View 1: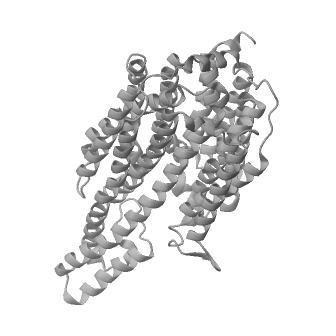
View 2: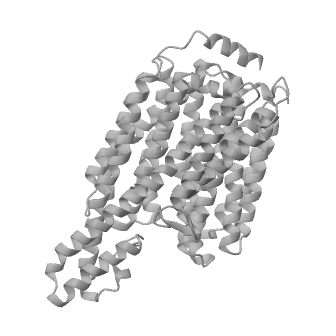
View 3: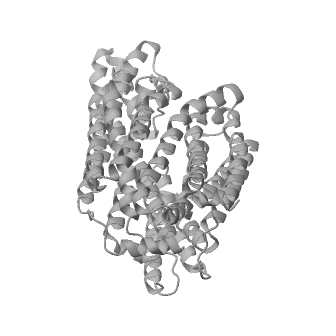
Amino acid sequence: MTGIRNHPIAALGVLALGLFMTLLDLTIVNIAIPSILDGLHASLDQVLWVLNAYSLLYAVLLITSARLGDIYGPRNVFAAGIVIFTIASGLSALAQDPTQLIVARAFQGLGAAVIAPQGLPLMLTMFPADRRGGVFAIYGTVAGLAVIAGPTVGGVLVSHFGWRSIFTVNLPIGVIVLALAMLVIPDLRPGRRHRLDLVGVGLATAGLFGVIYGLIEGQRYDWGVVTGIITIPEIIGAGALLLAVFLYYQARRQDAEPLLNFAVFKDRNFALATLVMAAMGFAILGLYLPLTIYLQSVLGLSAIDAGLTIAIQPFTTMLTSGVAAALSQKVNGKYLLVPGLLALAAGSGYIDWAAQANSGRWDFVPGLIVSGLGMGFIWTPVFSLATRDIPARLGGVASGVVNTIQELGGVLASAIVGAFLQNRLALALHDRAAAASVQLPTQYRASFVDGFSNAAHSGFEVGAGQSGVSLQLPAQVQALAHYVFTHAFVDAMHPTLVLPIVVLVGAAVAATFMRAHPRVQVVAFEEEAAVA
């Protein structure tokens, strides 16, 4: 058994399998939403919380679980996360009402949060800096496979075995990963006892919860009153204030085992890498959110067909990440990262340009390939640069920070891009309806325009093949209503997709300030990792 644990590649395979399980489950659930709505008689708000409960717990607990890995050993905490995630998957499959499913999904998010930060400190210890490019490429490939497999595997499972099967499939995988983790992954522990900063945990958890909950729920409450005198801005503000108190408290505890060790931010590359990761979290969701709605609502594709269309991008990423890993051994990662970010921005720009009300699904292939190519040249270099000068003892902190920042970027995109898209759609619907109403008899024009204006104000449903039926219009104007919606959505989508493109260009500019060559201390860091 000791011999098996001396093979880092085997340990990496188990860590990647755990990552695959959590990412696959996330993408599969999106496909199953219509079936969950029918099977549990759930409202749209409840189904959204089936997704959000996972994301909320995941983002809030990453930093704390990373610290737990420092205390109890990343292998043991990884195994505990697998147990939590697997049990939560079983509870999700057994849920009899929406509330039970939401609670079970929250526990799944907890399990994923415990799993996610443990891989980086293990890899920093098991692999020298010159081999980490290939390691991160494997992680990128696994992530790409999970994104590609989600729509197809999810579609097959839901179609033939029902929505509960998307959770039961995790049970055998979880058992296998748990057994392999205990067998293959080395039990690396600190040389001295550590204590958990409970006050820091409380402040960080409450602060992140307030900010992330407010961003997730803001659109639902129109960024106003939640209940009584409590408003969304107050919740976000309270969360931000608690995070400020947390940072002040941590600054005072830097010599007494803080939850967040500020030493990681002294490395310029790591600090800039966190900005890049935040930008990536924002850009990916900022691109996919409008695009997936467009493919289904405007072009009328099924969820599976829309997923397979988008899958061109992660498939390209999966193929090119290996090339990026090989090049990162010869060329400094900085000179791969900046072009990668710009290529992702350019590909996204092409997608924005190609999106029209009458476009075909294959019109986006060039943009998806270019953006996937760019993404393949981002993940490996950014992780390699971020961790190159980080000592193994700070691996847990670094992992928790990177994962949390990336999640925050995605949550910000959901709030900002979602709100901007809805605002632009409301304006475009009114303008398009007013312009199209001249084709109707005079007595229909005012009600036609008002119908779209009211629908935009109350939250227009953007399901597959939207045709304006929800506006309760006379049958003879359905085609005109469909024309108005599809063209208005495209009008709103064009400026919305500019947001992630601008963020990516800003990240590319920030990446140019990364240090091209390792610091002198990197040798000492490698020696420390070897001792650990």
